[in-house]
Structures are given as structure tokens and as C-alpha cells.
Length: 599
Image 1 (cartoon, rainbow, N blue to C red):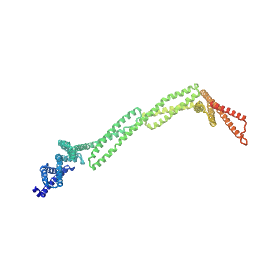
Image 2: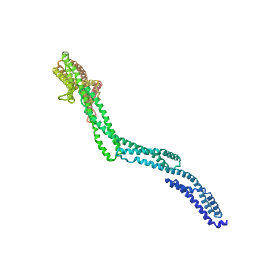
Image 3: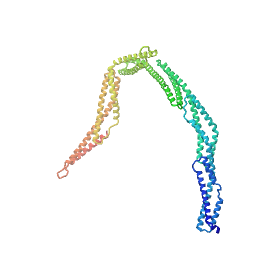
Image 4: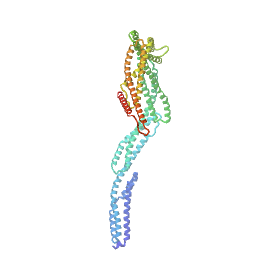
């Protein structure tokens, strides 16, 4: 031991140095692991350096010789040292060895992760040229193009078709890369950047293919638009000319059947023409819109100026439609006009027969019937005259005036004149017949006015007469009931005068048999109401008088009792007078109660 003790400090320094190098090595390994597992995304070259550094550090990972040497040397050195020093040194070595043992699983796992990460970085390097290729196709498929003629469009279509062919040749390679990425993604320890790599190649392929196909479609449509625009301009102008020609053919016809037949043809022609014109214009506008997607601004302005007069010509459709609508309204009005004439023509025969019947049967009818039927006929004629006046106004609006009137229109005019002449003649004849009964008409009107006023009151009064009277509980209510009953009775008298006036008017007519029967029936109903009114008046009048007598007697009795007193305050009264008065009060009260019960 003398050698070790004599050289203790030298050997201890050597021991500390190797202990320190072991600790530094583990620290460097931890740092290498931290750099590898960091969120930072390296280039493949950067990651290769980190991988090589990690692999270099991990050579002789077990460090068995170093740990054995440290343990042996420390045991020799501490053999004759203080117990505390020995414990401290031993704890340091134990901590170092324990840390090494704990580091080993992490290193082993990191070695696996390094291999996985390196595959992912290599996968990224493999993707790079293909992503650059897709970016190039995407750029060529999305950059602005402005062809100024069909030849330019053809060149662009040719280029785009080549791009699609190139994409198609890459399909298998890209598909393999996507599948390879999907396999790597299945590893739960995959790096985060792997998702973006796989997504970029997968979505980049789909998006690039869609954009390339969309650009080819746009260019193809643009070519079709260039070719269709020139032909469309010619075609739409031809449709406009046809629309103008058809509009000029729309005219009024005055034969009703022919007018509706022609209207149906014009409506069908309008719909056909409208669809044709609108369809041609819409196709032209679609070609214009497609061309404007790629045209340079100066060309767009030029095309816009060309389209403006074409678009303004769409008003021809509206003109055609308005003219057909006018004919539609004309046909409807002509049909209504024709219907009015026919309905009056049918009515005329019956109306004339009615007048002849009134004149031929006047000796068999009562004046009331003659007046009534004549007035009804006059009212009927007046209503038809209103229709005729409208027909005259309609004729002025619908039919041509002046010379050279079309034959069909002239037939309507002659029919209107015939009907108007007949109705006016019938009106004169009916008026003349009615004038002969003018006095009867006057008295008949007075009679009917009185009856119309009487009947509603009569019906209301009959209902009231069955309701009975209310039973008053005091003098004020009895007096109010008297006022109400008096008003009812006064109404009876007033309406009797109305009935008598109506009867007097009826008596002045030539014949008043029906009126006499009606007045007699109304008078019977009135008498029943008046008898009830008289009964009520008698009962209520007696009740009020009895109640007032009772009230007066009580007042007098109270005044007498209060007055009959001596000077020293003792009451002095006649017992017989008191009993007599009270008996009288009792009788009056009973009579009053009886009258109330009988109401």
C-alpha cells in the first residue's frame, strides 16, 4: 500500500480526470440525443452530421473497462482514507454509474429513432424533385394568360396537354412515393415533419392535376368561345330580324273566333321567338364571358363595345311581348263585348213579352201588381241600359271608326245599333205605360214606405210585450217603470199614425185589395200590442199612486208623532187615531204588494 499512498495525489488526479471524461461523454451523448429529437427540421446533410456524431459517441456504449477501472482504483485509493471521504467518493462514483445505466435505454431507443428519422429525411430528399416538378406544372397552370387570337389559344392548349401528359407519366412514381410515405406514417415515433411531406406530395399531386385539367378546360372553352362568338353574332342578328318581322304581323282581328285562333298562334310564335332570341343571346354572352376570362384589357373593352348594341336589341322581345299582350287584352274585351250584346239580345224577347203581358192583362191585375211589374221592368231596362252604355263606350275603344271599317267590325256595330234601338224603344213604351199609373205609383210608394217603417217596430214591440215588466222595490224604481211604460205606449200611438197614414195612401189607389188585407193583418197585430200597453199602463199607474199614498201617509204619521208633545216632554196622543192610521197603512201596503206581484 505504500506505493499507492505515496503516489495518492497523482493517482487521484488521474482518477478524477477519467471520472470527469466519463461524465462529459454522457453529457455529450445527452446533447446529441436532444439535438436529434428536437422539433427543428434539418436538411438531410445537417441530420447526417448529427447522426454520424451520435453514432461516434455511441461506440463502446457499455464503457465496462472504464467503470471497472474507476471502481478498482477508487477502492485502493480510499482504503486508508477517512470514512466520510470514502463515502463521498463512493457516492459520486455510484451516481455516475447509475446515470450511465439510466442513459443506456435512452441511447438504444434513440439509435432506433435515428434510423427512422434518417429514412424520413431520405424520403424528403426523394420527394424534392417531384415536388419541384409539380410546382412547375402548377405555376404554368395558374399563371395569367392573355391570348389575343385563336392561334394563341391553340398554342396554349398544346402546352397544357403536354403538361398533363407529363403528369400522367409521373403518376406511378408519385403513387409509389405516397404509399412509401403512408408506410412511414404508420410508425408511432415518426417525426412531425413527415406528415407535411406526405400531405404535400399527395395533395400537391391532386391539386396540380385539378388545376392543370381546369386550365385545359378553360383554354378549350376559350377556343370554342372564340369560334362561337363570330357565328353567334350573325345568328343573334338573324333572330332579332325574325323577331321584328313577327312583331309586325301582330294585328287585331274582329271576327271573334278568328281573333282567338290568331292570338293562340301569336302567343306560340312569341314563345318560340323569345326562346330562340334569348337562347342565341345567352350563348353569345356565355362566349363573351368566357373570352373575357383570358382577354387583355384593351380587347375586353373592344368586345364590351360590340356587345352593348346587341344587348340593347333584347328590347325587341319586350316589344313583341307587349304587342301580344295588347292583342290578348283586346280579345278578352271583344269577347266580353260580344257576350254583353248576346245577353241583352236574349233578354229583349222576354222583356218585350213581359210588357205585352202587362198591357194585355191589366184588367185582370190589381193596380199594385201592375205598378209593381211595370216598375220591376223599368228597373230591369235601366240596368240593361247601363250595360248598353258601357258597350257603346267599349265599341268606340275596340272597333275602328270612320270609313273603311272592316266587315267583321261593321257587323258588331250594326248589332249594337239594332239592340240599342230596340231597348230604347222598349224603355219609352214601358215609361209610357208606367206614366198611366203614376198616381198609383206615388200612393203605392207612400204605402210601402209606411209599411217598411212599421214592420220592424211591430216585430220589436211584439217581442217586448212578451218580456213582461220588472218588479220595482222602491218608489223611484216604480216611477222609472212608469216612464218606460209611458214611452212604450207613446210609441204605440205614434206607429198607429204611421199605419193609418199608409192605409190612407192605399185607399187613394185605384185598387187596394191586397193593401187592405195587409193593413187589416197589421192592425190586428197592433191591437194586441196596444192592449198589452194599456194593461201595463193601468197597472203601473195604480201602483205608483198606491206607493205615493203609502209614502205620504207614513210621512204624515211621523210628522204627527213628532209634533204631539207636552211642555214637560211627555207624549200626548190619541190612541184611536194611531190605531186607525196604522190600519190604513197596513191596507195600503198590502194593496201595493199585491200590485207588484201582479206585474
